[in-house]
Image (tube, rainbow, N blue to C red):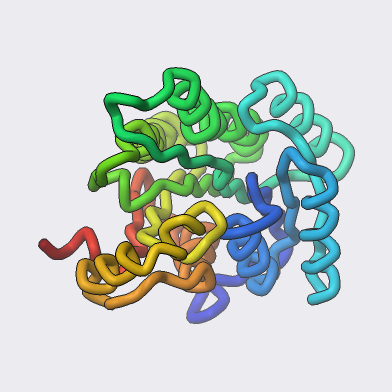
Amino acid sequence: MQQGTKLFDLTGRRALVTGSSQGIGFALARGLAAAGAAIVLNGRNPEKLAEASAALREQGCDVAELPFDATDHEAVRSAIDGFEAEIGPIHILVNNAGMQHRSPLEDFPAEAFERLLQANVASVFHVGQACARHMIARGAGKIINIASVQTALARPGIAPYTATKGAVGNLTKGMATDWAKHGLQCNAIAPGYFDTPLNAALVGDPEFSAWLAKRTPAGRWGLVEELVGAAIFLASDASSFVNGHTLFVDGGITASL
């Protein structure tokens, strides 16, 4: 049996992180690399992906790039299958790609709702299935889906986003239910309010930041680096019997009224 920090050692494993050219995805990729994993960065913009890769390589990380649109089923399947055949296995998947759109529900554009469904839910299915097929054949694998505090709570103006993140939580349970018997652990991380490009409008709103500080027991915005420990835990042998779980990393906001 492994002991101590060896439980969290990711040396010899490869992690694909979708939507990882910036924000939470980039921070998680960097954190998994620090734990020993080789990293595969993903995004739709090759230029931004190249910049992110260069930044990680400067820090001594083992990095590859795999550009594809996570909402395109055939493109995802082709990219994952090709990488597995040409480069090697993907042991860890972090489904991080996603988007936000804010509008009162009564005025919410139907096309924006469809984009949210594709970016936040369909992408988790497409990439999860493509990677799981290879993991199942090997009898092992880790899938970490990025949910949200909105998996459990709602706020005005983001009802469709809340619906998508609720779906991610339940899809995670479904993945675990179907794939645990094949040796996979499928879990989710639900960030609270973090200072990221996706939340730039809120971070720049003094009134919202003041509300958040009062609403969150920790009294502040989260830092993306504070998500890394949860990701390493769920990616490592330390979580070998954890399946279908959503781990909230939110400063206590879902624990208090």
